[in-house]
Image (cartoon, rainbow, N blue to C red; front, side, top):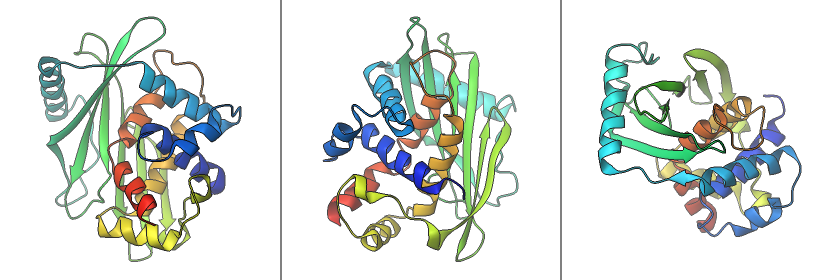
Amino acid sequence: MKKVSLIISTFVLFLGMLFPTLSNKNVVNAASNDTSLEGKYVSTINDILKNSVKVSDTDQKLLKENVIKLVNNGSVKVHNQDLQDAKLDFDTVFIQGVKYQNGEIQYSVKVDYVGNSIEKGSFINVVFKENKEEVYGTTELIATNVDENTGLGKFWVNGDLKFNETVNKKDVKFDTSKVKPLSWGCVNDCLASQGIASWVLYTAGIACAATCTVVGPLTAGTACWACLNGLGMIGVQVMFKCMDRC
């Protein structure tokens, strides 16, 4: 639970950059000249957005098939074995390409977990090299309920457990002051009504902050962009919808 305010501020800032069209331009403007850690995150995400490449339907199909094959044969390890009904939903695959400074293209393929024993927002993200066959690396987030007041977040990078912490749900608050004055209680209730737990977003933010310990120019081989890309589809749209409502 250390450095909570820094990490949550960072999380809100990079969410603002992931979806800059959702009436949060003040977040972008405030961070545009920021040389702090938060500002560097924003700069990195801006690079990702500017250097994204379109992935054809044919390539998307190939990448999806490759992920399914690698998961099924155990080449890509998943960690849902102890969860009764948690499974990867290959109908909700999100694919994004990014071109690095050296001209190399990598592809991020994110697959959501579904099931009553796992929290919405859990996912695995597989990064492929330019040939779309060779895996560069993987990230995986699994969030589960311990009890009414506590959640457990686990995060793996390339199959190695990097984050494993319990979260007191009542202590979780995002620094919404960087977006606009609003009621956190309203935002939290709104998120709950959409089936997304705020503590899962919190856990994802901490996990990515740990992955993105080095933030700089968009160079090939960094796990940071894949982590941020994975966050992009775990309900961030709903987060800002709720912020607008509240």
